[in-house]
Length: 227
Image (cartoon, rainbow, N blue to C red; front, side, top):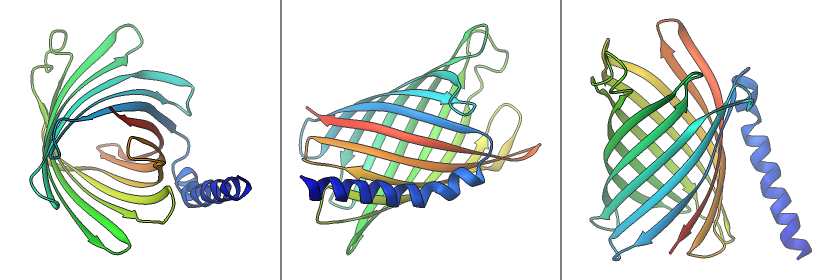
């Protein structure tokens, strides 16, 4: 028991050391995305999941909304998979609740370079916001998102990972084909068995707009269970 506690403390300490530069780089906005995921495997190749996420911004002082996800994944082989998902986001816009509907389709390729597992994902994302109350609400915003995920396999329950994701704006109501944002993520996954896992991490996000680059650090906390 003592050795497990020491290992746990060591892993958390290493994680804190790794993400410290992210917090320093992203003053002043610190955000939080905390949630849980319920998964179900219909077959060895087909998996569905439901996810809920609570979001806070403005150095965690401001609750911004709820996010609900419904995901479907199909494994073509041990390396290739396809996926689709629907997301409903409900945000607090001060005097009303803003609703955003978003759909994704994606393709992933996974391979191993021991002791690393590398996953490359390309996602097409389209969404609308405030359809009934906004003049531009029916015009979709479309992104192409490309992500590389690297996970280190260990002999224990903890697996560190790193991600880099690029957002390319394909179109919205005002713009076309624009490099929109980058995300750099570091985190740890704790999986004591095949049915339960816990993920904690943080990403530095750079948004590129007409007013220059804005930065934020987003802390990620998620618990997953397979039923």
